[in-house]
Amino acid sequence: MNVRVHSAADLGFIGCHVCRLVMRSASGKQRCPLCKSLIHVRKPNSLSRTWALLLTAMFFYIPANSLPVMTTSYFGTTSTDTIMSGVVYFLINGDWPLALVIFVASVVIPLLKISALSYLLISVHRGSVIRPRERTRLYRITEFIGRWSMVDVFVVAILTALVHMGALVEVKPGWGATAFAGVVILTMVAARTFDPRLIWDRQKTLGSIVPPGHGSTATS
Amino acid sequence: MFSRMALIICNECDTLQKASSLPPGTNAQCSCCSSILYTNRPGGLDTPLALMTSSLVLFLLANLFPLLTLEIQGLSQTTTITGAALALFREEMELLALVVWITSVLLPGVIISSAVYVLLALRLSLNLPALRQLLLAISHIQPWGMMDVFMLGVLVALVKLSDTADILPGPGILAFGALVVLFAMAMSRLDIRQMWNRLDVIA
Image: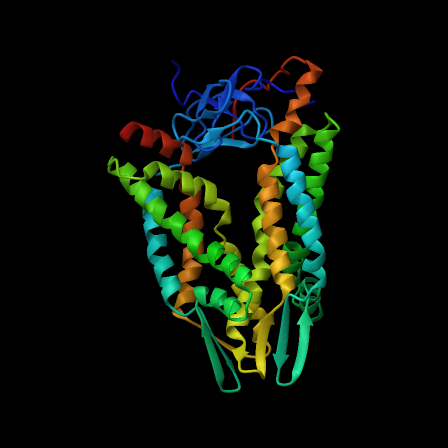
């Protein structure tokens, strides 16, 4: 059972996200006296902003996977690669560890981010009170792993730079790579605009008392 | 007026709690959602300053020297990190080129040089200009510096090319490999919350 201990907002306190200073919350726009960042009780318009970014990311996900990320010419033979065919390439060649890395970075992480953020948004909209700890952890993972999806974009850039020997041997980048970079950036920004404290704001409606052993700061 | 460091609010669940001092090398977790609230990093300002200064030197080396050279049947092609972005630019993928250059060169460069500058100022208690802005910049752009992801991209590209071509590592790749490791260590030793409080004392 996870019950909110003391919500800072309810107690009239506000914390700066950047320098972590704790202060009394004031009405209207408030700036942190220490680092001068704008501070908010909750991230402004968190749900609608996150939805907007997430839906745009979903839209970009289609060309990111259907358009080629690169075209390879090698002494007369030309082949195009999409995100998926890049994964398949390593599978066929038996490079299992690398196939796994690319599969996780290019397929699992973007899908996980899109579905995790959708789930979190819907759960907040519906006022869910179940498993707030697990949902917060899901958010933390989503925010942390997002950047690794960019690996495919870097691979395309490096191959374009190196495999450039006239028209016979060359790699040309495709628009799929740009769309894919768009998905990565949009989902990263979406994760940042989502406010995980909204997950917990519903918990206080339970009105329960602090459970024993939950009042002190645990160290590890 | 309570001490500035006596309270902490969890960024993820908004739980207000007391912030007691920690033994070195440990972190405090939120009593409600178990996210990490703050840490006590051993080594004070000296360790991150040393690591960041080394990172700055390696960053310059990694960007000045060639990363890789590819040889296919007598033809050869060399690239640097910026060269990878320039190649996309050459192929008229300007937007993608910008994304690659900003995340692999510009932002890491800004983070590393700002961190050296701010750490040095805090260490020597000098109230140099723009300390607040640079410390803010470090906090905000940290996730957008992607040198580690770029390094993984280099490894993937190496394996892809190893069947069809000879690849000669350049001096840049050694510097870059060391940079990725040292920079990660430097960032993990950076205590932004302590740095803000130190800045408040000297400013």
